[in-house]
Length: 245
Length: 242
Image (cartoon, rainbow over all chains, first blue to last red):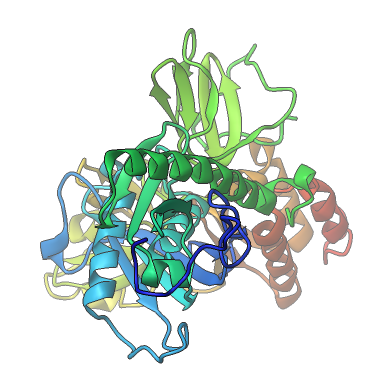
C-alpha cells in the first residue's frame, strides 16, 4: 500500500470512500450561456467543483508585442475565488494559477482555429467558485463550452478529465482526499471525437499498464462529459430539446 | 423552411437544395461524408467527413455544406455597409470601432469633406457615429473605411443599437421585405448595417416600437417563431399593421 501512512482511501469491498466504483465519475452538470455580458460563457459543476468561464473576442491583441501576424493568441486567466476552498486563497495570480492558465491556453490553441484571426486575442476567463479536486480539468471543459458558445471556430470540443492511483489501484476522477493523499494524478485534455490528447500532465509515478488504464478511463469519461457539453450547447438554442430557444 | 438565409451577398441560385429539417450541430460533430460536396463556411474537411467548427444550423446549397453559426463575431469584408463609432482622431485620419476585432481606419482622402491636415476633429470627434463602407480588408485584418458614396455620412441624430450578426437576415427578411414593413409600421428611418448595428431615427413612438422589435430580435431572432412574434408586435405599431 502506498500513500500516506494509515490513511485509507478505498473501502474493504474495493469501492471508494464516497461510494463510487473505481471507474465511476463524479456527477457533472454543464450549462452554456450563463453570463449575458460575455460573448460566450459556461458553467460547469463537476462533483463539488464549480467553474464559470467567460469568453470575449476575438479582439485586437494588446499590448502589441503579444500579437502574432499569422494567428490569434488565446489569453487564459484561471483564477480560484478566495472562498473556493476551506482555507482562504489570497486573491490574485500566483504561481499555480499562472501555470494552469498557460497549459489551458496551450490546450485550447490546439482546437481553436487560431489562424482565422491573425493579430487578434481571444480572452478566456475561468473562475473557480468551488474547488474539490481537478479544477484545471473543469476549467478546460468550461472553456471549451464557452468558446463554442461565443461562436469561435474549433476543430472539436475539448474535455478535461483526470484519473490517478490510490492504494495501488487506478481510479477515475479523483476527489479531494484521493488527490491529496493518492499516489498519482493524470489530468488530460481530450478531443472526444478523434480521441486526440491536447493536454497531459502527470503528478506521481505510474507504470505503463497503470498509465494505459488511466488513459482508458479518461477516454471513457471524456465521451460521457462530451455528451453533456453538446447537450448544454444544443439546449441553449434548439427548440426541439425544450431549451430556452 | 426558407427563413434561414445566408449572409447578405450569398448567392441563392434557382434549383438550390434546402434541407427538409434544420439540424443543429456543435464543433467537431460530423455533418456527413465529404465525397461529392464542398466544405463551406463553419465546416472543415477532416478525413472522409465534413465536421462542423461552430454551433449552428447545417445548410446545404449548390453542393456546398456550411454551418450558419448562431453566434459569431463580425469579420469585415470589402463592400460591407457599417456603422462605426469614432474611437480616436489623428491629424489626417479617424479610427472607428466597427464592432469587429479591429478598428477601421478612415483616411482624410476618403472622407466626404475637404479636410485640412490637423483639422479632422472639426468634422468628426471621438464618440461620433458614421455610416461608412468597408473599402478594403487585407490579410492582416487592416480595415480601411470610406465615406465617399451615396448616403454615407455622419449620423448626427437617432439611436444606435446592436444585434447579433446572424440576426441581420431575420430583421431584413427576404429581399428586405421585413425591413420595409418595419419602416412603414414605425414611420422611422432605419439602417441595418452589415456589422450588426442598427440606426433608427423618427418620432418617440416609432423609436420606442423599434426598441421593442430589436429586443425581440436579440432574444428570439434564432427562433422559428420569430416571424409570428414580430407580427404580433407589429399589430401594436404606431403605423398599424404593415
